[in-house]
Amino acid sequence: MRNVNNNKRFLILENKNLMMSIIIISLPIFLSNILKSVHSFVDMYFVSPFGDSATAAISFTHPIIQISLSLAMGLMVAASAIIAQSLGAGDKLKAKKVAGQVFTLNLILGFLFNIILYILTPFIVKAIGSTGETATLAVDYVRIRSFEMIPLFLFSSFLASRQASGDTITPVIFEVVSIIVNIALTWCLASHFQMGLRGAAIATLISHVVIMPVFIILMFKDKKADVYLDFKDLKLDKDEIKHIIKLAVPSSVASTFTSLGFLFINALILSYGDPVMSGFGIGNTINSFVLLPALGVGGSIATFVGQNIGANNPTRAKATVKTGMILTVSIMVVGGFTMILFRDNLASIFLTKGTVSHDIASIYMFYLAFSLPLMAMFQVLLGSYQGAGYTNYVFLLSSFRLWGMRLPLAYLYRDVFHIDSTGVMVAMVLSNFASVFLGFILYNKIRFDRTIMDKAKEQI
Image (cartoon, rainbow, N blue to C red; front, top):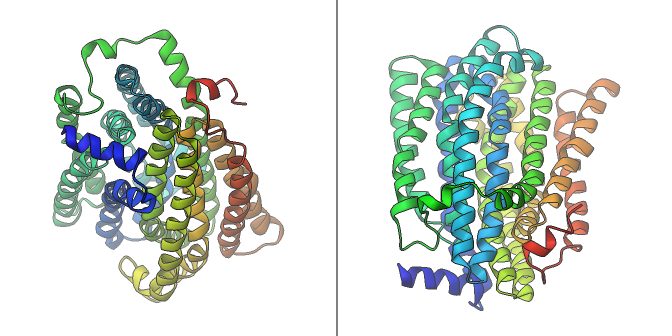
């Protein structure tokens, strides 16, 4: 294990072939993200035979679940940045302390959000404007999945410590186990026992719960890992918590605003009818899968930037961002071209050709394909902000993309120009262009020569 840790440190801090280092560290994150996406694919695939209402219920409730996980994501970003820079500076005690604080916070928050999500879901679904069968299915689906909050919050703590140290392989093992359980149970419950959406939700819940005891034990017992926990690390420290939360709040708010923005977008799309919502849902599911390499690289960029800043190597930190940008854009150009060519066949995996939902999904993927290189840049920029500790920039860029551009344009096209659902597609492309432009402006303001402790005082 010591050799493995040394190899990771060499790849992140010293290896001259940056492109290869990024690919090696990113590949497990990419595979992990594939497996996470398979959860959505599995639900969509086995639920789609039950009609547009079922697929629409999954599609427009996804942001509700993501809003609940926003705080966990913010804490993960903050913890990853601090842990990465601490490890880069050789301060493992600091890294352990931060990991323990975040574990305790996530345990408490996971329990609270389980209760909140279960109680508020009916009111949220009603506020969105969903009615009838779709609303009933949506409430059942989210309420069942609300019990995932504790395992998902705690797993984000595990991810923070492992990815910040460059161990991107171990989380993949847990994802493999989880997805195997999910596929088997979803087929059994949703299809074989004809439980439909409810069966898919129960299967996804169980698939997350079964891995929880194992990764918790590993967090405490794996003494060979760069970051492991002792019980003394779990005792909340007021000053440490304040520092973590100060960094976590911008990312958490950004994640909340993003999910809330998508909730408004979904409410707008739902106004065009369940078949349109179903088509958009399938298009987003496929697009998310194609975008996974960029997400993987973006996650690794945060680790590279954080550790190199901690090791006082700003030149390598900046070079990592540039190399990651070239890599992801190249892959997404190929991915976009492929999606344009095969979009009809991809939509047919879930939807019947000739239906409104199928045609909408095909058209939507055409627009999405042109945004893939832009979304790749967006993810790398976010990774650079996170690794450098500029979590306020994550908030600014994410909020601008949805609330400053996409939502106003989408409602303008529908309510003023009376354009059909293609107006949402155009708004999406334009918002991605504008956000990348702003993203580079913010990137040029980053100080790569100062640690996270100093930069926390500079945040606006």
